[in-house]
Image 1 (tube, helix red, strand yellow):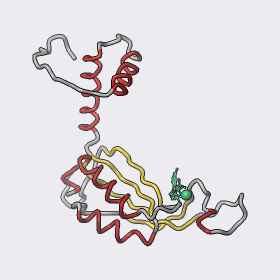
Image 2 (spheres, rainbow, N blue to C red; image 1 turned 120 degrees about the horizontal axis):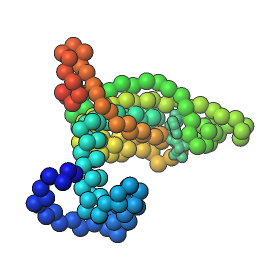
Image 3 (cartoon, rainbow, N blue to C red; image 1 turned 60 degrees about the horizontal axis):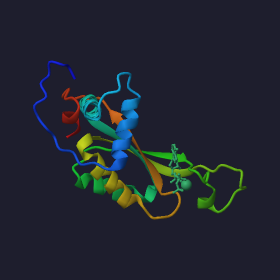
Image 4 (cartoon, helix red, strand yellow; image 1 turned 180 degrees about the vertical axis):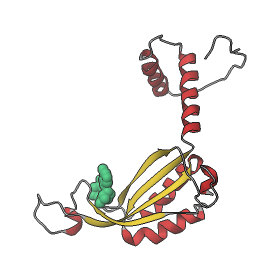
Length: 168
Ligand SMILES: Nc1ncnc2c1ncn2[C@@H]1O[C@H](COP(=O)(O)OP(=O)(O)OP(=O)(O)O)[C@@H](O)[C@H]1O
Ligand SMILES: [Mg+2]
């Protein structure tokens, strides 16, 4: 923050001990050892810059093929207007073994999965993750995995609309 910027607002903040410790660990890594307040201001500022730079998230979910329709419906209910789905194969930490109940222990066995890619405004990220998790879950190994990537741009080709406007 520049010296000329006037500090005229007091903001009360109640936080956990762990939060304070994390802030302190971060500020000790700064060249000029800022105060705790200054460290929190800088971190919030960095978060705001990140949100501006990456206003969307790309969710990549690897799920069981028979769960695809339920996940698609759950996402549609949230207002998601587009999904890319592909048939893929892969394996997780059991290397595909226990799901098949056959094959030698050391052998890797790829299992068919569906890969869903969906770009959402970052405000929708948590509800989308919950919707996918709740509908794709069976509780057994091999339920799948979700990856989240910060997304900086999107274009609707027909109209040239950009970013969130290209998603809704
Ligand atoms: N680290 C990873 N990177 C990329 N894809 C992965 C990764 N882990 C899992 N996948 C994909 O997700 C699919 C399902 O993984 P899976 O649910 O078996 O994960 P897991 O970590 O073994 O969890 P669980 O113990 O519940 O089985 C895999 O077939 C693979 O396509
Ligand atoms: Mg697994």
